[in-house]
Amino acid sequence: MSAYHPLTESEAIDYARSLPDLFQPDSELASREIGDGNLNLVFHISEPSTGKSIILKQALPYAKVVGESWPLTLDRARIESEALMIQESLCPDLVPHVYAYEPDLALTVMQDLSDHIIMRKGLIERNKYPLFAEHIGTFLARTLFYTSDLGMNQQEKKERVKRFINPELCKITEDLIFDDPYMDSPNNNVPPAIRDAVAAVWQDTGLHLEVAILREKFLTHAQALLHGDLHTGSIFIKPDSTKVIDPEFAYYGPMGFDIGAVFANLLLNFAAQEGWGEDEASRQDFRSYLTGTIRDVWETFEREFRELWNRHSTDRIAKTPGYQDWYMREVLRDTFGFTGSKMVRRVHGLAQVADINQIQDEAAKERAQRLALAIGTSLIQFNRQASSIEEMIEFAKKAVK
Image (cartoon, rainbow, N blue to C red; front, side, top):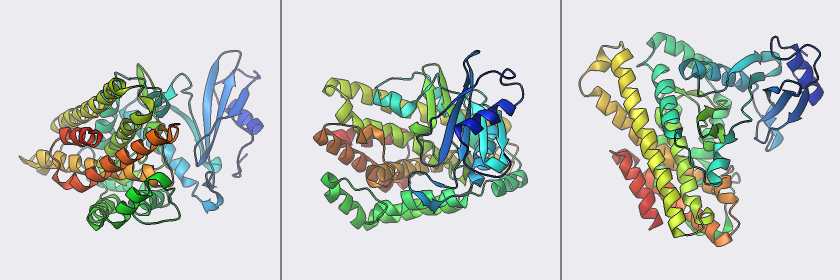
């Protein structure tokens, strides 16, 4: 099984059986392919007699959502497995454990999280997760600090940057987030009901200037090792546990991009309450939960990041009075801009979100789409002026009014 080929279910079972110390010798194993993403095969391998199970994730050499006409590097499987192992070393309870990585097959074997659900699904069901803000704020603070020049030797960091050059997947991000949504691109999927609002986005050169500045940061600002695609579909959750998955877009970029991805998806669900809330009181209640979560995530991240800086940074010049405050303000401003960018692309870009698209009432769906677009564009336009996370929450509340 050394030469690369997409695995069949029987081959996935054979591979799982070959792994040491996971399953009983000669016991019966079951497999089902559960991948519903765009880029990979995902096999759930279980041992019915003991209840043990694992996940085998195999990268495909093309984007499954499009087909073989969109080729993709298999090296993203290495990037994902190495990123997960780094993240686990920093946040052992917040990512799935990696049991093995098979480079010839672009295959990662990891912990099964079937007792969790995808957070996007949980939010659509209007579940609340009281520990999420603490968990994801800690994840962001630790993974971003300890992979940056503040938290590791600068020369070692440069060596790590080389290992996480991820040009093909970064190109997807560059096009789908910072280019296609701002022109009449064939990659877009424009909802007909809001074409007027989308056309206004295409014609707004002031907005395009801010996007160009944000894109330049994404292209050049190798600040920390990012997850790269940290939306609510990349988070498994239950009330007492949060697990971040799928860092195949990992690369060295601006910290605010990861934080903004989390906030954008919370705000997309905020907008989607037009279709999920039974009445105005219900919508207001869940929206308050979502904006409170944004506040708590930022406050947790900032508090813990500053504490790590104060305790563990050995860089003399980084301890210059005023530098930490400037740095955190710049991360906040980037977060505003990238939050808005991630929202806009999910309204009329190639890959949209179930939070909005699964709304059955067409009028409510249109309201949600317009609301998400209004919040997203406002955050992009304001990003370089931001001074407090409360301003982000106010933009969301004003858009509703």
